[in-house]
Image (cartoon, rainbow, N blue to C red; front, top):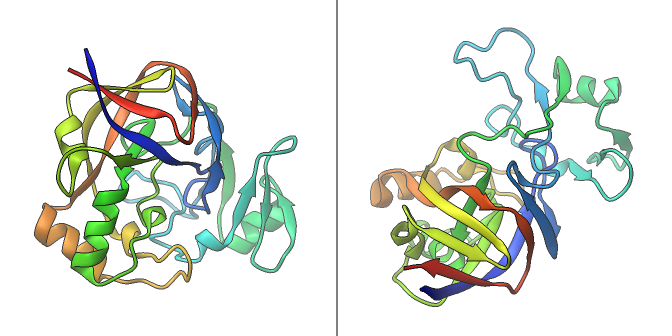
Length: 228
């Protein structure tokens, strides 16, 4: 038995970790998440004291201004100055102050290959924090417009499977948030009220992570069914 709990409102992938999102109408979901998602990452110079080597929005809040494109062969990045550089270009690494770029065929994820948030959850955090309700601030792969539940319906999906088009996602855990969500994806400015709100009202949890049970192609508008 399955209950429809929402529909896919948007799909995003991030070809280069912490750079701008690429909006998709359709995405192939494999065992390692959305095809092309987080398959490149820049390495920070010097040793990483916490074992996390990647250059992210924590260090450079302007990374959203760099726009990767996977529509052709390889990956090219449109820089804020308007230059189009191959992701492997030494010029791009130098501009970012990175040591080098690495290709990661299975992706580089903080916890799981799929991340999901509902439009209602993003809107509620916007209301509580007095900031625009920007889902891209939370860097999800799947944005779901819910049909059931309260302000944060995805919390109730943890431990269950979601059928999204032909694909099946297991919702494994809630998403613990960090300073990255303070970066406004449109302006690059930091708005700490967002993280303070998530910490105060949500104990730092917002959205969910999941793994792939059954691969398949997912499209915007697909129904989201909860296995019951």
